[in-house]
Image 1 (tube, rainbow, N blue to C red):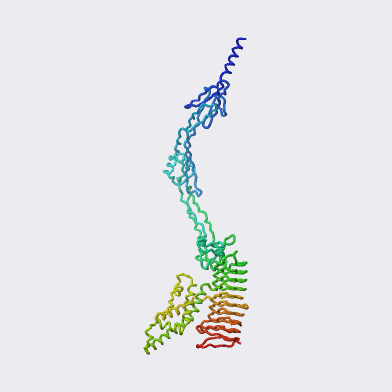
Image 2 (image 1 turned 45 degrees about the horizontal axis):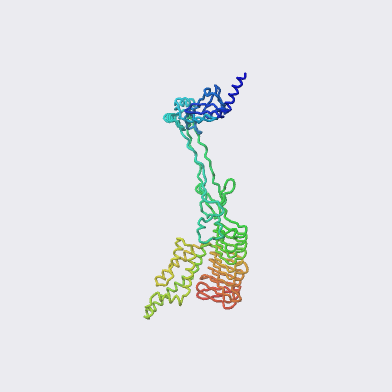
Length: 599
């Protein structure tokens, strides 16, 4: 007993003297090797990773397990097998049979080597691929037979899809395809934005802080939308031998309301009036609203107003603002140093202080050119006749002066006998600068007039051109645009039609009319120019401020009272009122001034 105890004690002492080293497990060239621990070292552990099945002592282990004997370890690798499959579908309209093939290659795995470690996870890696098998075409044919397909099978397509080893989706049988319908569509070629902005505004030298963009509007006759009607489809035949009806086409009907007209059998929508295009309601009715209503002052918040229809402003138009319309303009308030331009009538219920009011747009320039021509043409005719008389006299008397030539004689006659010719020339030049710079034939010919008195033939040609222009401009000025206002001060008022100042005063203003001018109250200072007639309550001032009333040849000027220093011009004749006169009408007939009582 004593000897045995000593032996066991010696063994225990020897273990205490050995170092503690953990056991390890490793994989080398697919072989698992185990190294036992030393001293009190830990025994190694092992577990399986992906694509590996691990057994210890015939039992499959999935969690980390302590191993004592490597001979009890077994493992197997899990390869991914290849896959080949097919599916047959019929299109929604049943006019095509579609073969869908799918091929997936397999993968063969091998064990991954690992350095000695106390905890080992067996992992596998792909070492090679496994090609899928082709699909047997006969299997596809058998399935097709069971489906009742009654159209020829596209054999070459079927076989190619089965043997390609690539995923594919091919049509292997066809019926007669349906010709699809075409839906009815509406194409709007106008915009429905409230304001349109100049895309080049940033490139301009000056910035207009009142510019809020042009109010979106169109002119009458503008195409707004096109409607393409629906086209029915054509029936086909299914792969089962049945008739395949096409779906019904959808239709978007072009519905129009006020201000829009349909033409070309309802295929084109055209603006019937000037105004702003709108789409309204659930049925998207297309309309053109001909009047723009501003329910406040036109000021910095609204910016300039530019509209192709009618404009009504319930407030004032403040300084520096522009209001432009193709149609009528009505302003319930005042106009302060602003520009008002319309293609039709203008009504201003209160005052116009400063600024420019123009009814008839650019036509007012033609009107004034026409008024100048009506005075210039008789003068040119008289100049030509005077030249003939003087030149004949100079030939008979053989005076030295005849050698100076036509130019000298014409200029002397104009300067001494017809000085208004040069004034009319200057007026035409200034008015020409106000004309738009376009290629219009009439505008071009006005700008090309030669205002030089060079020769008899040149003046004769000028007279002929001016007479022709006078007639053409009269034909252009068939539409009359009137201005009705209550009061004006230091303003410029133009109208191709009549101008009526219904209130108490027109002060130091310039009024130009293609018809008549009627001032119910006083007209103090300024220039009144009308084609036919001027009627004023009181013309001029007690202090003798110069006031001019001018009409074309054959026109009349009348007033309840004329003050002194009132100048009356009828055609090329001019008369100055020297003292107050009452209830008179002035005319110039047969080269003589005539006064008629209007009591």
